[in-house]
Image 1: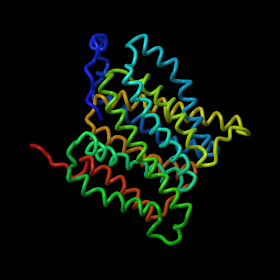
Image 2: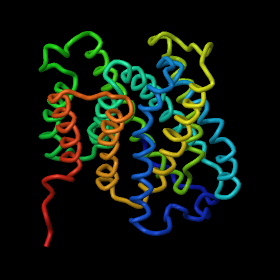
Image 3: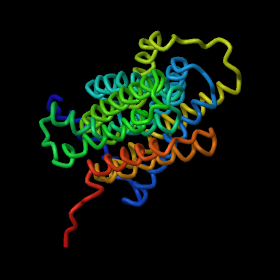
Image 4: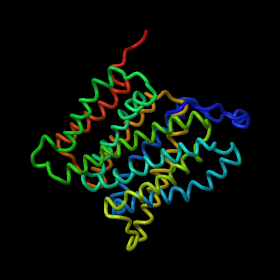
Length: 317
């Protein structure tokens, strides 16, 4: 990513709102609340029963409607997002739209819980992008963890169980991995744009959600196209709940909390997302993974934790 340009005199005089109240305890609670909102997203997708393309586009479009008045309120109180911030948010939203389109489709192939586990490879995509673009050093943990993550994904995808192998499962795993890559790109770009406009949360998310709507609509023909006709009132209600919880609330919680926490702490707190998703999928949807898939999910989560230094961390006196 290009170096961050110096801030204007107006931006420099903007009050710094990146420091929240309550310290790390409140910040951790906000990130956990965001992870919980993300965990129920896959459940809401399955319960709504709407096709993947329509779900992805509707989720983003409804989120924009909710975010616009909040964005104007933030603009009047804190200041406007810079032109560069708008451009970065649009780029991040394009990646997010691809993530949503692929992830929503993967839910119908491998289930709500497994698909949520697969997208967490974004935590490994982040350091890879940081190395290739920002030339940040790749840790030994990352190199060691990559084969572990691939092993976990193969277990989740049923590659070691003949009864689970099939075109649908393979497609679902591939879509989940694509979604995780898009998710990682979104987080990487968002991290860079946050340095340009510190203290602004709603406006970047609004622009990103608008861009995600367009991106999801553009790739929708791949999964059957948008089909809004015939959607019941119950399904629209669940889609609205998905937009409010799984996008607006989730990302505002995470963005507000993560600015006060180290990256590894935020990554560790977000690991609760796939665990909650697996548990909720079993309780609400009756999706019970096999033993090997459960082991694979545990390997993926352990790999993510190890890559972020949350396991095998050296203790300091």
